[in-house]
Length: 118
Length: 118
DNA sequence: TAATATGGTTTCATTTTGATACTTAGGAGA
DNA sequence: TCTCCTAAGTATCAAAATGAAACCATATTA
Image (cartoon, rainbow over all chains, first blue to last red; front, side):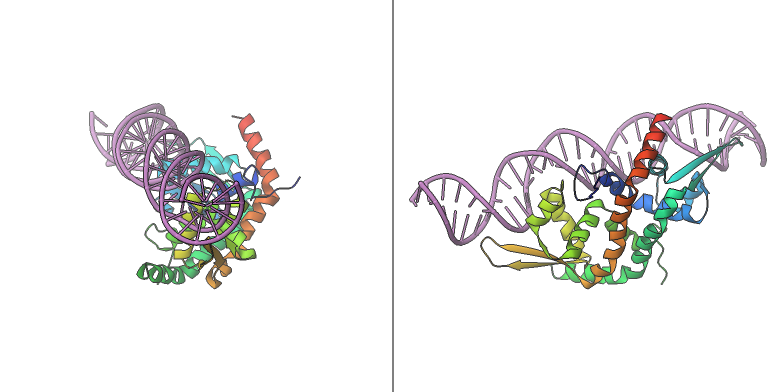
């Protein structure tokens, strides 16, 4: 069986859709360090809404990249952790955020040049 | 100056938004091989619409990742190519699509397991 | 009794997306 | 001359995704 992301019907497109999501990248980056609880993720990922965080985690869990553990404390505690499959992905995902942090100045300069000439 | 993608106002978020886009990933992957014309990209990236391809290319050009060359043929020819800055990114982006192609079966299995238990 | 914390879901207005049609310009064929 | 063709887009509009804010259950603390 041959997979090719350039073919619309290829299931790899689903994966690419998931990975190519800003929030998923940020969530995976945080969970790569250690298991984190819902509200702590919400606090650490500045700007994410509860709804989107909830949806993002649910999708990542469904894809087998993240696991969800509930503890019967009061109030209930829910902890999210990265799975072994997710672990195989984090170095790539981290490279993306690192590239963003390292090359942002070149990108901003390119944008200014582009906007001036337009 | 410190950049941190986990801060909402950080400009790196703009970059992450751009990279964390399925279509941008696919476009950069194609251009990494060789310069390609608009309609050929459209043909090779199965499922992309003209509008979205046009928008994606414009954003990538503005960010300095892709260059656009117009040739005065009839009809006009427009060729898109990757820039040196864009070149620094393609290995990372290629790793994403490779991960998708290599791990799709594990992801599909995880999804089925998740859906059965729900 | 009221406020606080956790981990969500619901609602609704705003954005974004995608499909489709239209445009511009020159050349080829009838 | 009239019509069609290609390349590379733009315009339009309906459908889907997103984000902000409110709501919910439960139990503890002030």
